[in-house]
Image 1 (cartoon, rainbow, N blue to C red):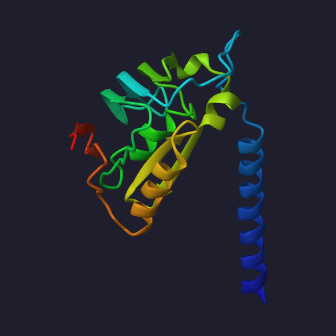
Image 2 (cartoon, rainbow, N blue to C red; image 1 turned 180 degrees about the vertical axis):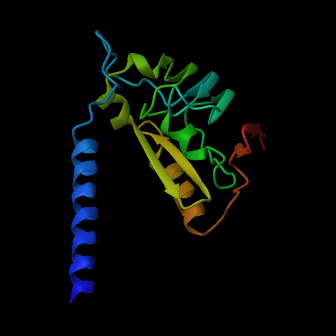
Length: 178
């Protein structure tokens, strides 16, 4: 019975600390805010990364992304492939401005993502993550047929469809057009 009492005490201590951490996370304020005069309409689905570098915190010793230049035309289907930890998700999450870049700029439809109303930008972007195999980024202006084909390719387990022009391996994007 002393062992049970000790186990209960340990579980209560862990639970109290977990509850404290949950409250801390829930009370955190976002540093991402709308600009004073935001853009409310995404005119097309073009995406441009210009000299983009990113760190998850200012204190981080190394960058997750470094000097990325990437240009994706509106309507293009893009697959981002790479090994675990190669910053695929980080790259994709900069498009709907889930994070702000450390250096450089990310533009969608000809405007820096920091110029958009957050809700308007995020409503215009759809992301499909398929395990560790890649991601598909689509915009409301892309034809449904194209999006459905891209999702179907990933769902079949295809890790590198022929029509996907961008592959991220390691830290640098490798671009090849069919």
